[in-house]
Amino acid sequence: METLSAFAGKVWCVRKQLVVLLAPLALIPVVFALPAKEGKCLYVVLLMAVYWCTEALPLAVTALLPICLFPTMGVLTSKKVCPQYFLEPNFLFFSGVVMASAIEEWNVHRRIALKVLNIVGVKPVWLILGMMITSSFLSMWLNNTATTAMMLPIANAILENLFGDLEKLKENCKLKEDEEAGLSQIKLQALTSEKQILTEDGQEGAERHDKRTPEEVRAESEYQLKVWKGFLLCIPYASSIGGTATLTGTAPNLILMGQLTSFFPDCDLVNFGSWFVFGFPLMVLFLLLGWLWISFLYGGLNARLCVRKQDWQADAERKAKAVIDEDYKKLGPMNFAEGAITFFFILFAVLLFTRDPKFFPGWSIFFNKGYVSDAVTGVVIISLLFVFPSQKPSLSWWFDFHSTNTQYIPLLSWKKVQGSVSWNIILLLGGGFAMAKGCEAINIKVNPLYFMIPATTGCSFAFMLPVSTPPNSIAFASGHLMVKDMVKTGFMMNILGILTVSLAVNTWGTYMFGLSTYPDWAQSLNVTSTTTDVYNLTTSYLNATA
Image (cartoon, rainbow, N blue to C red):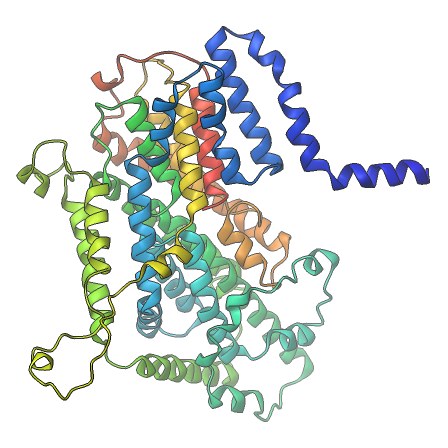
């Protein structure tokens, strides 16, 4: 037994290498089970699926396999495969990430968050709404993962001022950490980056004279702990929901664009403007339903959680309001750089939306038809960020020869972008497009968008497990959530997501994209049975990494 156990341990140590070596051999029968080209294409797709599922190779490296295998197996020439890694959706994604880097560089996201919280108030149910509104809005333009990482520290700092130390709450509740919670003790590094929001008022609140009975202390602590969990859950959930509103918000949306470009080049129905008209109402509806559900469980809408408002609640809310106001004041008036970033951010959104929104003529009519795309618009705007100054120019400086010569600093540097851009996501996008290029589309006389749109949005609506999305993983890594918390909350969120997507697709989505008819642009296509699987596989793995 000892020998067998030792051998099993060695196998486990090299399990990834074994998968890399054995998976290609195990899948060889697939090549001969289908016609030549289809069998080889399916072989590559299944091999990539195995490598992605097991992470035997880094995800980005697996995404490069079509470059290696499609030409050598006679599926596609390298001239057709390689360009798939830098299609227009890749540059649209890149422009969104660069804009997010600029927003983060100048703390515009923090100003937005504190302003929203200052407006909605500090009652738990409204704080949850404020956090969800802010997270979803930022996630429309920034990466879902980055939005979650930026918002969680702000939320935790506010909650610490409201309720005190989380460990003290657990002690008051007499909660025992089980093994499952113990597995999640990897602390989120960003949770300490925003501690400056706490002031001396928070310290005084911890030292107040407490005349409550033990039962009252426990009831209040249990309530506060529930609110805390609600905050930790609402931010990643809202980030995932908000990303569906724009094409740049999340990777599955860009995959949709890439697949349309590859399979249906004559389809011009989906662009930034038309998708926003479809996705924004869907986001608002789902966000409202999600807020009601999370508030029902954690924020006080549930009658059994609503306790009579005690003095400690009123005091804590007043102090939290004061802290939010003070922290916002510390930001001071918007400086030149923040104003410039805000201007370019608004310009970025407006130009993308109005290029060709379909329901009125966009500004693209002033250019040659088909020449200017969303990618062109995005790259033009972000290029200006590397030129526009971060300090207000002064004409007098040129004529004052005694003034200090200061170095010209633009709004954004390439060094900052290099550290912020998710290059692995860009390669994953390209790998998905390359896979799809080898498998053309299936023709079943149904509008392809009727399947592609629900598949795209559905991939973002995964809420039940920490591994479902990177935002979920970040929240879980804080160490304050258990799997059962996510399952309990996420199960209903998944159901609500299915219902809202079905409603959207079969109502205003049908009108927007003509889903009830079979379009002319979907007529001439090569037929294989693997395309739907490729599309779902690609969007799923991009959703798991974006």
